[in-house]
Image 1 (cartoon, each protein chain N blue to C red):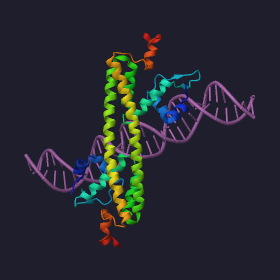
Image 2 (image 1 turned 60 degrees about the vertical axis):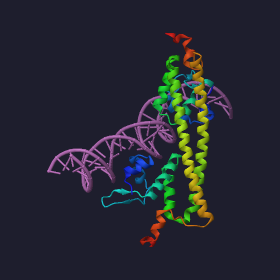
Image 3 (image 1 turned 90 degrees about the vertical axis):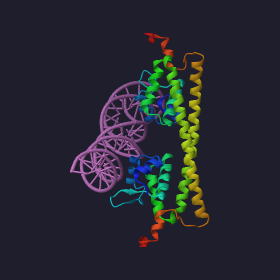
Length: 138
Length: 138
DNA sequence: TCCTTGACTTAGAGTAACTCCCAAGAAATA
DNA sequence: TATTTCTTGGGAGTTACTCTAAGTCAAGGA
């Protein structure tokens, strides 16, 4: 059994966020001890893992709650859950593609600046530089 | 030259967001025509591209403003800008790694559910199921 | 000339998902 | 006993949009 602090450390999610998620109904099954303190089991950690995963991929909290509710509803919802996981996976793959594109932009920029630095060139691309050759020299 | 609407379409960023970014000082160089209407040049589109890229990778607007301000300051800040791009790239690479990990989690889950469906098994991992074998049968 | 369309402005409300602060209460330690 | 260390819940604050309102201005078509 783990306290919220331990879970925060193990799963690399802040205590704040875990409480927020708990309040959002993401962990309806986490037990409390006699002092009302949350006792996360190893199984609960897996639950945190999947919530973290869904969040990391941009799933809205409302949708995560729906997924949790399907889990609570029992085995009759397995196919629905399967579909959600598949869709989420597709979304993650799309994000991967998007991230690759942004990395290309950053690569281009990096090379652009490195070239300027190595050859001691002016940044003629910057519109602010163009304007210097006008009244703005003041 | 492009209107804000055209830019929104070309760069796939909403007009609202473009105005919001403009108000945030991300495009201090975009010209206006005699009717005060923004006229984005092709060069400005590149500016939108880099802002979009920085945002997509999670850079805070405050930090984006700083980068823009460095650009405005001129060629003396090229090394600073180079450093920012490098750091941003590293951040994007970290995100890529994180995304890959989450995809592993999703793969695992997908296989798990597929196995349940194909073999018509119960989800014994779900704590809600375990509880059924108690007082909760009611 | 009137009307529609599109762009502009400021201001403010609403939203998501945290993120932080704080006071209360229990337990552990000095 | 006093103090420190936790955990708890409530609620305020933050970021970055996102949307609506309310009004202005100018160009182009019927």
